[in-house]
Length: 135
Image 1 (cartoon, rainbow, N blue to C red):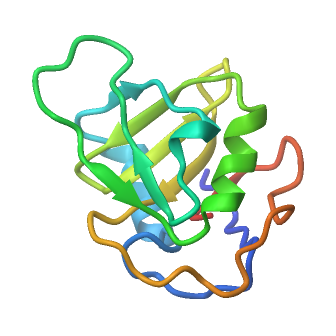
Image 2 (image 1 turned 90 degrees about the vertical axis):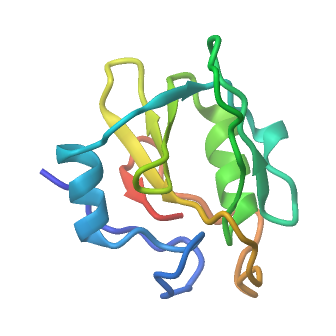
């Protein structure tokens, strides 16, 4: 079962770094491809939307810096998060999980920056315990 979309900021774009379309959310679940576990905290998310990815374990390849349009929402989600985070390079997505391996969120990220959405503001995050994709 797919999570329902939750828009925290009024943005309706599906371009890279914005919302994750439900088809991609389904693909991330059914065909995730390689998943790289990350060490990712709210400190890794810069205010300009760039996120520095750091592998949790030895990893032979360099991980890219990625961009997303609502950095404050991701910072707040990660500040309270105590589970695992994975980079799904095939789908350009971050999979955020609770300790029981249930997805809390799928965040669409881009490899190039775009404009931050004007409605991105601190305090606009999904409800506690809620499932979201595409912050």
